[in-house]
Length: 193
Image (cartoon, rainbow, N blue to C red; front, side, top):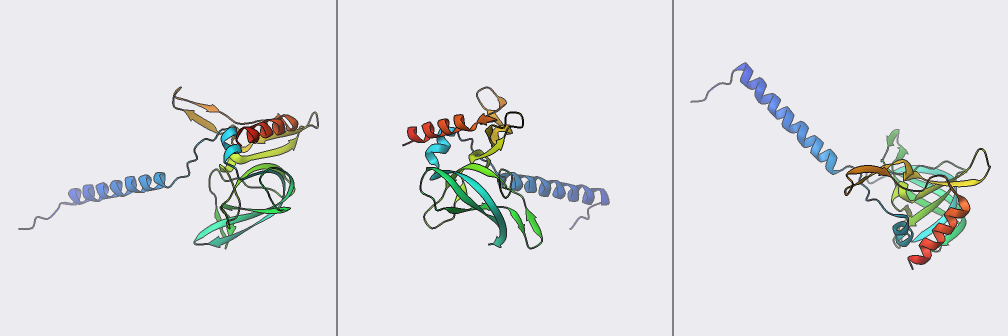
């Protein structure tokens, strides 16, 4: 004989189903979240197919394969590693297209006229990408007091978990003089050969 559930039993059953669905949604979302392994400066220099000082010209976004991608054009000002044409296009996930906005944590965005050092990576026949996203992005700016050119890594303010010490710490390059940065960069590239 089939037994009918009381109103309270049905409510409890529906609540349990809802909680199970909620937990599964959270697990799936966490599994697809963006996670970048921390890369040292030496690892960036060794793994990059090209490293260059670039000036942003502009960016456009489009929809491809159901995802939004941004193509940013740069003039190459100087090359430190690899061979690059005079103008390079970088393809990164996220952007604005078709009335939609897609934001991907850790993906750098660039402004026209801005100068950066980028650690680039690509495969034959594919567009360039920024290696390590914010980790491979070093913005050049002028110090307001001295007027000297300085460099700051986008990921310098991002806390990194140290499993040995079981604490978070900040890593990366922040407010380093351009000449010191270029010396460090050239040494890291030479050591990675």
